[in-house]
Length: 178
Length: 179
Image (cartoon, rainbow over all chains, first blue to last red; front, side, top):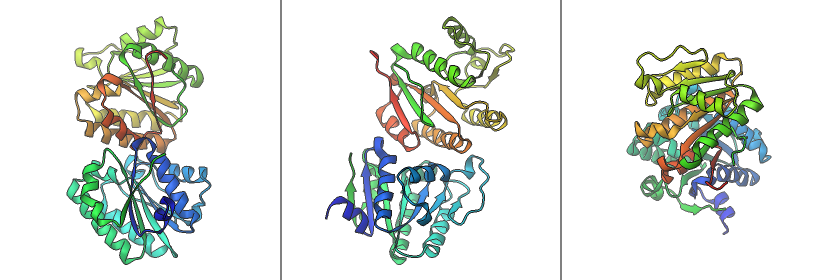
């Protein structure tokens, strides 16, 4: 199985990426998965939904089958407009709100789908390690229960501690380099 | 050689030997192209900065300065029309609130903001605090559709911190001494 097959087919994966190409690899992963006809639940904790949509369009990824959870815009003063494709969280530390939002899209978005995090490291800016690990554990279980694939992207050098604590929850780790 | 940043969030990493000339060149490029500029000075008092700019032939009349250093040494800073004084480079909430007030009320006037130099904050705050703050204000710039250049001095920054800035920066530009 080559790395693209693995990225598409495995249920739960950690993708280890050099920090310098983080955003590029996140978008390429979404492209690989959506080209394989999987629908996407994109959790963005760093960039406003509008920026994510621009990035998707640049790679010619159809946004029809992408649902976004924007965890940052409201916290910096953006007044969200109602959209069936985007859920705005109150702030990036709200893991309960995030869990509810993911659950909503898991139920509403029909067909084979995956969740991708941009990026889970951000949770550690607002929560302690044990809370984040516990959240990831619950999320991976929930994804299995709903038959949703999950892709978590970590920086290969900076996220070693987090990686050591969550790697056993996932089917496999894939290292992505240029 | 300094180029005009074309990405929304840029980290500009400067060696100290070329810091002064690079920052002046950056200011010149942005202010000539965009006519206006919002400039947060976190390491030099605004009077010194204005004097450097004046000597370099840079027009400062359309630059709004936010000075977070002068009040640390002068209880009553000079009354200057295009300067806002803050208490300290470590006052991150004050910096954030001031930035929001300016950008949300300027009608889109300031397309680019320079933070010079953000590595100064590392003398007062932990790398974790700096990353958290940059995470927050980068999102602010994105939501408002503006650009920001965060200047870091190479000698004051470490590789681990810089790699983590990839979380929210579009580009990290490293200027070499011989460029």
